[in-house]
Length: 461
Ligand code: ATP
Ligand code: MG
Image 1: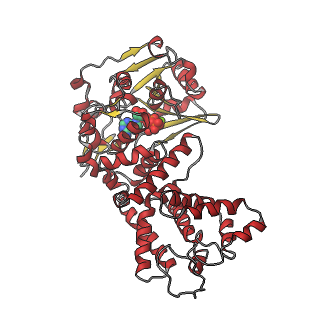
Image 2 (image 1 turned 180 degrees about the vertical axis):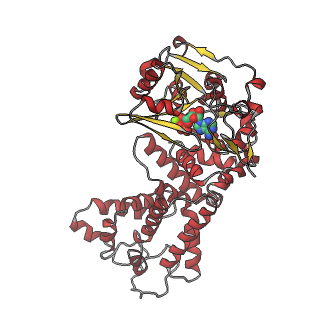
Image 3 (image 1 turned 45 degrees about the horizontal axis):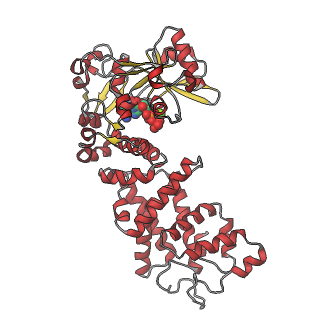
């Protein structure tokens, strides 16, 4: 049943007539030149036309923390249509929230119209503009409001700060600046209702606390465990979006254990428990997350497919080994394991095909990289995903799952000239187990070490 959301709790009446704390330049030190060109242009144009316009959200927060904002958002009292009318290069986007993207050169600034925090106040004129489901989750919200209401509908106090580039003032309705100073992450309003409105805020709490080094306020933290299951009602695309933000935040190594601590992983990475409960899996995942964080913080690209491949590998490995142990041919055993893991993951949160395709290629390369005789290493080198497969193999070595010697061999093999390469080729089929007998296709494999030889060459097809 879909009901109208009546957010009386967040009305100005209960919180009192909020006066923003207005913090002058001298007290915060953020000059207008800290604002991107496009955001400056957008606020100037809007203000010249008589509208209110502020830089808002993450950019103000990041500047106050002395960090470089990723992007700039602007909040205004102009309607989306009015904004569209002022900027030639702009387009309206969003259904849940109607916002306008304004483009200047390569930069895009997101412009949103102040939103009402209290549906009751606008219900007469905007009937049905805010719609919630039976758990209180807001499905659509296009009720416009004033600046104070806009501050109140935002998630955390530190995300509800407005900066006016004209006056160089920070407007703070909810004590966000003080929270930043004492490094507290605090939801605006009643935490349980705010999570019910939008369960994604639970994931955001974990991400912001880990990536900004903030402690989650006890009242903000308390209901999370109990409400974690509400994530199941959120459209998967949004959950995935927020999960990617979390994994690519540069602080995944803190975020992922924190997700688990709060019980939030059940709905997003259901297989994580199994992996993290065994030392090898734990070491592998943490190593992978730390390397990902390092790459992100160094400004290098990372591939979500690779990341998901690491998060799910030990589950795939366990299944693969189990099928192999039952006498199944290694290649079909691996493929069956991969499919099952992807399917089990999809029951909670389907990873898009573009990522799972990558993931499977990386996994399928693993047995091939154990092949170090004949032409196989040369063929592996030519594989378009060799680099990812090799990086993955190194993680396996470093975490103690595989002998480090294998990773070292590949490192040398890549650098070596032809003469050295042919010297390096192993005479036997396996990774240094002294097995010389050639096996027939479909014959019995020896145990351990994964699959080798003919089995692996079939993976190419
Ligand atoms: P970052 O971009 O660094 O991840 P951000 O705070 O800018 O952080 P965005 O997702 O870009 O996050 O959102 C911009 C602003 O919109 C936030 O600062 C917050 O004020 C508001 N906001 C975003 N998501 C929500 C939400 N789920 N509930 C309430 N307010 C939100
Ligand atoms: Mg942002």
